[in-house]
Image (cartoon, rainbow, N blue to C red; front, top):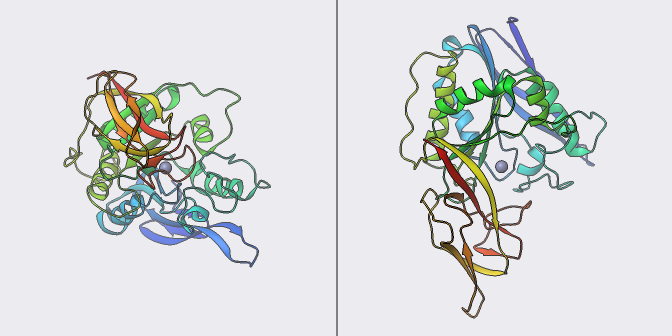
Length: 339
Ligand SMILES: [Zn+2]
């Protein structure tokens, strides 16, 4: 490992914690919208771990997780390797309290990350890729569902042999409900941050905390414990991983079944809890109109569970109101595959 680590305008020598920015984009009034970054260069050699929060601008629990890990829990003297912390991955979304970039309604995690000459959000993605993602060995991408009763879960794609073993090790260490998929990366997959990382053999685990618009428990403690557990599992800090507590966990291997959508519009009442077993055909929610008449009984499509009730549009800010329109995503369903 080189003695100095540079990310954006930050250079951290061995044993140092430094802060600064990755240069972002310039607005019409010449305000510079940059990406904040913390870099902790450990006293000894080890992997480079990237912690990124708030790819979606209304999901802020990870900001606090990164603060506690990098400002309270871990010191450069006790660290083997490097931590890069990005508290807000999309400042254009965060600054307007929006899920997506306000300026072009795009998602920095879904747009191309290989175009320095691209559109506004693509340029942010390119900056994230060149300065942080491409320099990392392990990436924890911290998101949040909105409601406080959602299930804390993590998603890993085990379809790529290059990253499978490391992702399974990260998930076991973090220790919350795990949803797996195994889609192989195809040649024509768009060069988003996640796909470019997969191509380069960098494992990216997606963590979904809960109550995402607030900084609150249990999300922050679960997030901090999970990140420290990953660091212990990869020998970046001393200590044994601690089991997660204070949250419901569906153990073993689980698989996403898909989104359950509304076929009618109106207010919605939720009859089941995230993490509670629901039989195929059971009613999990009811949609009713402003007169109080029942319009739709929403049925569970499979024996399984729900991890969250976003009750929102598919791409806009989810979970803003307990109301839906036709096509809104009511719930994310998953099935339990093996213990
Ligand atoms: Zn998100």
